[in-house]
Image 1 (cartoon, one colour):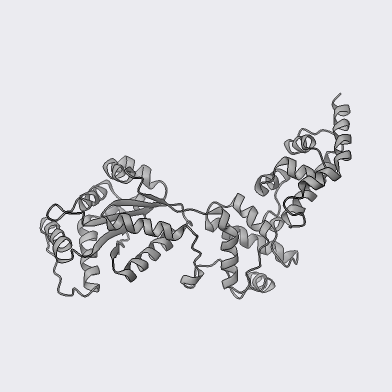
Image 2 (cartoon, one colour):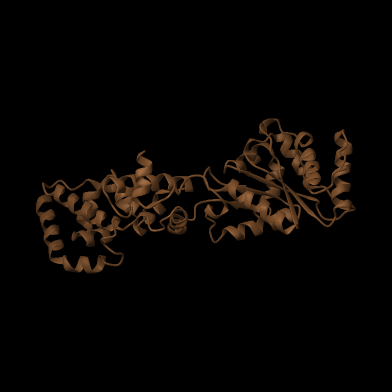
Amino acid sequence: MENKKVLKHFGLKRDPFMQAHDSGDVYRSRGYRERMEQLFEWAGEGQLCCVIGAIGTGKTTFLDDCEGAASATGELELINLGFPDREKMTVSNTVYPAVCQHLRGLGYTKLSMPRDNQSRHIWLKSLLGRTLADRRFAVVIDEAHRLSAKFLRGLKELTELRFGGGRPLMGIVLSGHPSLLSHLDLNAPDVLARVQVGRKIIEMGLEKAEIQEYLRRRCGRAGNSRVFHYGAAAIMENCARTFLDVNELAWSGMRRGYALEHKQVTGKDVLGGQTLRDKMRHTGVTIEYVAGVAGMSPNVTGDVLAGRYALKTKGKYEERLNEALDGILEGRVEPGIEDAAFGRRKGQLDSEVSEKKKATG
């Protein structure tokens, strides 16, 4: 029930961070199309390439988009190998049947696949090199970091398929966790060598500079594009590593904002409960910046943050730094104000430095 109250408070008709309802809910960064075009180029040339990224970086969505876009143009056929047990996959029980099923779906209903592996190899070579010479084919395998060494060697042989000494007939796209590269190094170094030539690796990840646009788009689709203050997005740029991290931080920020009856989620809401040093680290501001906003010297600020300030006034300084950071996080202090704030409080800074010198002898 609390979630519904939070959504209603911020003018959202539904959870903006749940699994996408449709293609319009998916955020695609500026480099997204470039990655797709690069994958099409490698796969269409019959190359072996990799798509790597941690959980939550959008690999599955990216591959689905690539499959849909390729199908729409008709220039490249991406064949997704779905198999429940990656460790037991073989070329015989996955690749050949998947190619045959895919082609039947394209209208080749009378297609017949030989039973033995040697005949299948010749059949596939002739089919792709002569019957379907005007088309390009590539096999896509997700969770490739779980593939066996034997299967990986079989894939390498598929990339060597040629008809009459012509171009490679089938591309291979391996997708998985960043550990995929070390898995290839351990189990199929010849496959890794193919990937490393020309650095045929697409790395999926969070483009931090676009988090604000991501939040605006997802929340806008749910009813209110102005849920998050720019300071909240700036905090997430320093804290989040994947879109899943952003979603988690966004929800925790919305809950705190709702509890405090904020109209907009601020950076302070996102960082609720953090220590002074954690706030500094996640806010990403310099000591000079926060010192200027707080009206303190950078030296005193650095000592307070490091826990070296032993005066009775330490608590007062921590309170001022917290207030300054909260002002930055809540958007009450705009970027670029630090110089003016620092200048206005310069007299205080000098006295604080003198006080510290007296205390330390």
